[in-house]
Amino acid sequence: MQSKGLAGTAVIVREDGTRFLGSDESSGWVWQAGRVLASQLLSTSNFDVRDLKILELGSGTGWLALTLAHEGAIVTATERPGALTLLTRNVYGHLERIAAKSDEAISVEVEQCKWEDNVRVAGEFDIIVGSDLLYIVESYPLLLNTLLLHNCKRCILTWEERIPLEETSFLALATAAGFKFDSSIHVGTNEATNNRVLYLDMSFGN
Image 1: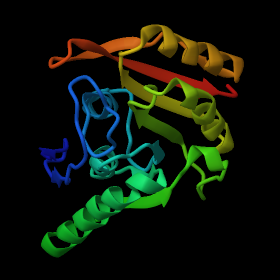
Image 2 (image 1 turned 180 degrees about the horizontal axis):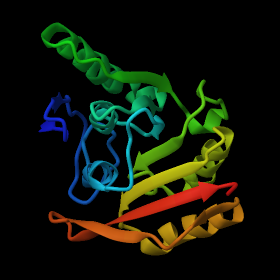
Image 3 (image 1 turned 90 degrees about the vertical axis):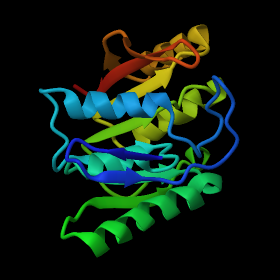
Image 4 (image 1 turned 30 degrees about the vertical axis):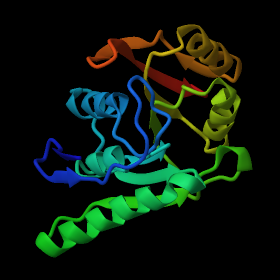
C-alpha cells in the first residue's frame, strides 16, 4: 500500500496475509480503523504529534507508525512475535529508502510486545495508540494490563464495530481498571462492510 502523510512523503508498506471481508484477523493489512486513526490524530487542530513519544500496540504493517513519524512523532511500533517480521521489514526498509533519497530523518523503532508475557517495552511514552485491537474478547484484560504496565497516561483507540455487545464490555473493564473517558465516537464507516469505525480517547490517573 502506498499513501502520503500530511507532509507529502510517500509511505509504502508491503501487505501480506489472508484477508476476509469484514475481518481483521490478519495483521498484514492496513485496515480502515488505522486510516481513520491517522486522520483523527493528524487533522485535529488541538492535537500536535510533533515530538510526542508514541507507543503503538498491534502495529501490523507499520503504516500508522511511519505516517505519524513523518509528522514528527517519536514512535515505537510493536507486534506479537508472529507478525514482527513484516513490521520490521516495512519499517526499516522505509527508513533505508528515505535515507537514500533525502535528508529527512524520522524516528521509528520496532519492538516485540506479546501482551501475555507481561513484559514492558523500554521507554516512557506520552500516549499509546492502537487500531482494531478489540476483535478478540479474551484479549481485553491483556490489553488493559499492557496499558497499565506501560504507565499509560493517555490512550487513543479506533476500531471497526463488529461485536457491539462485547466491545461495550471492554469499556466496562476499562472503567473498572481506572481509565476515564467519554463515550466512544463514530468517526467513520467501512464502505465495504458498512460497519462503523469508533474512536475512544482514554486517560488514566488524571
